[in-house]
Length: 326
Image 1 (tube, rainbow, N blue to C red):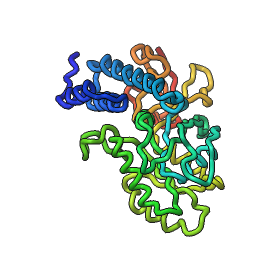
Image 2 (tube, rainbow, N blue to C red):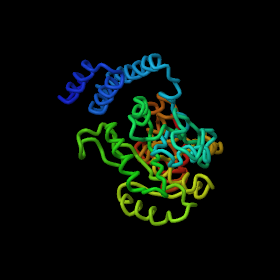
Image 3 (cartoon, rainbow, N blue to C red):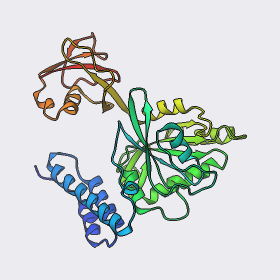
Image 4 (cartoon, rainbow, N blue to C red):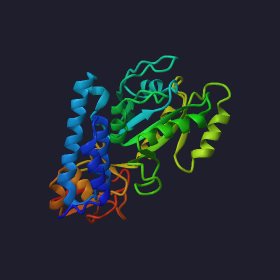
């Protein structure tokens, strides 16, 4: 199958060939990936571009002497979420309070210099949060853009005690410099400088402090139509349980459980899929050959009746139990 690459792809490829720095080369490669049509004819090319990006990242690490953990953190759990914000917004306190990570927490800015992952539990799954260096007037580390692009979603931590609307403007402006947009828009909608759009959740922090209510209401009024907005106190642990649920909703994922004929379902080890996934998608996630070999399935949950036979294209819902027959 031909790749049918558009002219914009070859323009990005030209920028890649003329780029001098690893950052510019990676940016061009990621632009090529974003522009490339998604079909079987481009699978090999996509794999090749991803291999080039990984190789360039490794070479840059060796030259800079930076730790690999700061540049490329492998995804673990159901999803990977990058935690971003301006200095002293409380990113590290949040990650420390809600995960098993131990980032340095202090009452002064710029205490985070590397990317630090931690696992947040949500019911029977874990979601990976990554604390990142703060956005400031100084240029961000070149690898931070790559980390944010690879993440499934973003948490935008905003200090409610210090002009939250201006903070949001600074964060979104910094993301735009990285050619990253936020929200549910798709490529081609709006500015053509944006290479990828990320799901995002705005987290207003420090609600335990005085006079933060007005700032939170302003933040919610301005952005609620574009992004979900919630409030917490990372220091006191206020509303962290609600935050777990908000993160799960923001990710647009579902949990599906499998069972063998005559056996109880495996409720401790769900399959995590994107909303809108089908029975065939679930079968493939269990094993790559199961999609082709699936004869039929029985479903408990979103079927008209429990245990009813369902078609391959049946749309699954959160909490469904499936029994695959090959």
